[in-house]
Each structure stands twice: as structure tokens, then as C-alpha cells.
Amino acid sequence: MKISSAEFVISNSEVSKCPAERIPEYAFIGRSNVGKSSLINMLTGRKSLAKTSATPGKTQLINHFKINNNWFLVDLPGYGYARVSKKTKQKFQKFITNYFEQREQLICAFVLVDIRHDAQKIDLEFINYLGETEVPFCIVFTKADKIGSSKVEQHIKAYQDSLYANNWEEMPPYFVTSSSKGIGKDEVLEYIDAINQD
Ligand code: GDP
Image (cartoon, rainbow, N blue to C red):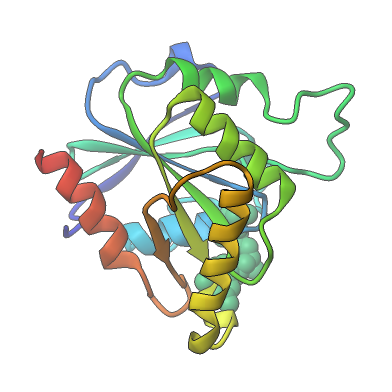
């Protein structure tokens, strides 16, 4: 898929205020600093469509972008901030879980994980939450340029084993990406395109 237009539509923290338009929607989520903004900018070919973590404000909201006038790319807040106390705040803020539980247009969530690290507890909890909520999802391994290509398979296999240990029976669709090297862009966009054509 070639991206000919990518426009920011709205930011908010209430699923009821997300755009009413019923077009397919794909959401991107992951731990803060995982490379989500960089990935969105790579996918859309826009240098600063998604604001990087360094930009306060926007990263704590649900951000809708309309792509090619026929689907929404949704940039969701990063989760897993160390400073968020479990006692005072739920692990995944209510407006995020409301989004996943109520947004009927959502076709698939892309869960970003840093390919360098072992599966993190919070990511596994989030993936398990998506499973319980029956939200289709893919895993996007980010920053693949940071490990040697020979290590990529090994890291994916380790991730798969962690999912199996969490009672998953199979590996979900996954993508290996590097925003700095432009790796994985076509694969992710083709995947979205194929669903949109169905
Ligand atoms: P976000 O918080 O998930 O939106 O993450 P950002 O996109 O802001 O990226 C966090 C940091 O990781 C920044 O310093 C990026 O330059 C760096 N980064 C993001 N993607 C890649 C990548 O594919 N390769 C490398 N080497 N660095 C990356």
C-alpha cells in the first residue's frame, strides 16, 4: 500500500469522542520509548506525524490519523511508566481499556515490543488482556537494527516461548521492524491493506 495522505484528525481521552466515521481502524500501542512514534512516522512516510515521547501532552491521548481517506491509524498512549503507582492508577488507564472494549471499528491492535529485551511483564499482561477481551492483535518487534540479523530469530523464539508459558497456543502474526533502517514498513502496510481489501 502506498500512503498518499495522512492527516491528524483528533486527540482525546474518551472513546465516545473518537471519530464517528465507520472506517477500519488499526491501533498502535506499547511501552513508552519502544519506538512507536518512529514506527508511525516510518509507516506514513511523515517525519513528525506522531509526536515522539519527548513531546509532552499528546502522547497521553488517543490520537486518530486518517490514512488515504479510508482507514484510521490510532496512536495510543504508551503504558508502563515506572512512576505510575499501581495503587492509585490502574495499570492500563481506564480510557485505554474503554477504547479496546468499546471501539467497534477497531480491526487489529499492533503491540510494539523492543526486540532486544526478554518479554516484559507489562507487555505480557497487556497481550493477555487483549486475548481476554478478544481483540485481534499482531506483535511488532521494534529496533531490529540494534541486534545482529542472526539474533533476530533467536529473540523471536524466546518471545514465543514466553507467550506459550502464558498459555498462548500459537504465535500471533508478527513483524520485525526498524524505523531507522526502514525495515518492516511494507510488511505492516501490506497486512493492513490485505485486511482492508477483504
Ligand atoms: P515512543 O515513546 O514509543 O513513541 O518512542 P520513539 O519513537 O520516540 O523512540 C524512542 C527512542 O528510540 C528514540 O530515541 C528513537 O530515536 C529510538 N528509536 C526508535 N525506533 C528506532 C529504531 O528502529 N532503531 C533505533 N536504533 N532506534 C530507534
